[in-house]
Length: 196
Length: 185
Image 1 (cartoon, rainbow over the protein chains, first blue to last red):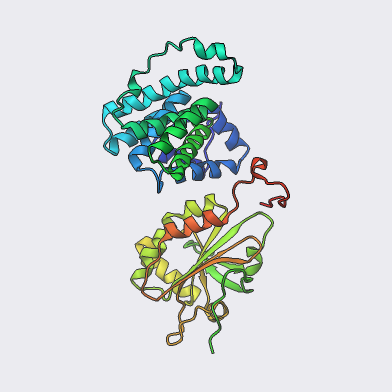
Image 2 (tube, helix red, strand yellow; image 1 turned 135 degrees about the horizontal axis):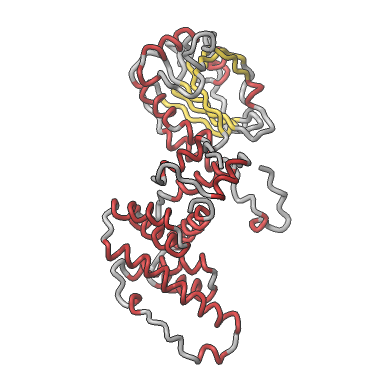
């Protein structure tokens, strides 16, 4: 197959993501072949998500690590891990972001099933899922809740979303900050369909 | 008597001016007219002015706009730089200054000062343009304007932020409310 020369818009995007030279993906190739103006929008959405009034740069990077892990996306994971380290996050905190994505993925399936089925019996059968990392998170209770909410929003569990949102409000988190975290998760999920 | 500053909601005045677009011989100049501002392709225009070529604050600012050229391109916006200097002065300045050699946007020459005057950004004493920035939508309507005094530099990030905010988003039907008109992009 002939190598496709990416547009300036895409090349700048790939430079920002610090991917290896020669990086390509099927989705990116199709968008480029069709000269899709969506590429510029995606890049702007992604870039605009890296700065926020309501999230620190370290928090953005850690949410990124978690959402990229949830998407199983190596390319974006590497980008956000490097970003998190540059912002001073420890290996323990980064590990917790990955753990959060994995644990919440289990919870999302299980609790979603419970709220889908609406059968009391399933609420009585024990979940038997270890959730020890929720006890004393190294990134702090509030941030761990925020990360849990973001992952749950991506995976689409109503029960988890409502539970974590309520818990955040109780901890004094503002709706703007909650929405910003979910917005970031939505953009990273969207990016993961093209950059992988 | 100088005219009032044109502001938000007003039609950008008609003009036809020569701009410097390249350093290559025979390809240096291109005529830009106000007709290009009105288009069906959804292209916006960002026009920024500075008082005089060959001064100190200007190249820093112009280089900053140039560095962010991709941001404007990705937002379907044509970037145009302008001053009341002639196209030959523009060309000489670009050839003379390292930071201006690889400019990606046209430098418009409002030699007769008619456009600066119509826009109401002509400084009374020296008859040079204030450091004004206009964002013009694809219908040719001014949607944002900022005017700084002669020596105050601009924040290009702020211009990009405003452009983002002006350009319609949330076109998705899931965001429509009953009774609301269909959103036109």
